[in-house]
Image (tube, rainbow, N blue to C red; front, side, top):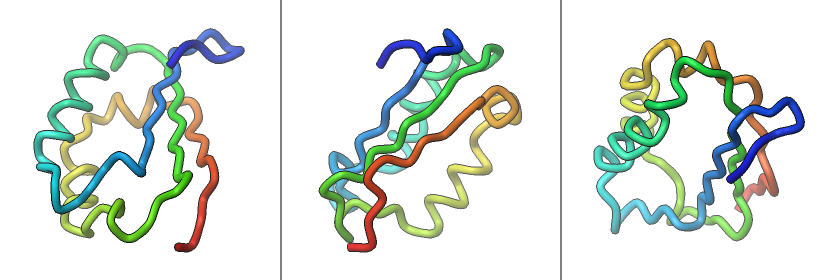
Length: 90
């Protein structure tokens, strides 16, 4: 998405585009791992946009558990900030 004021790369996740019944969560995790691989040793920031999300866009609990297991430790170490935009309670 660009760079932050601290000159860190910024990744933008648009939650409404994720449809739990239409998307393979394993492939999404794989895609994220491949996308972040060049940046895993560098600081970066993440924006999670929940605009217009609903129950169709939520992750199942087992996928969230898998997500946290699959991400390498350097991901968490180098994540400088995570911004939640338009959080809602659907």
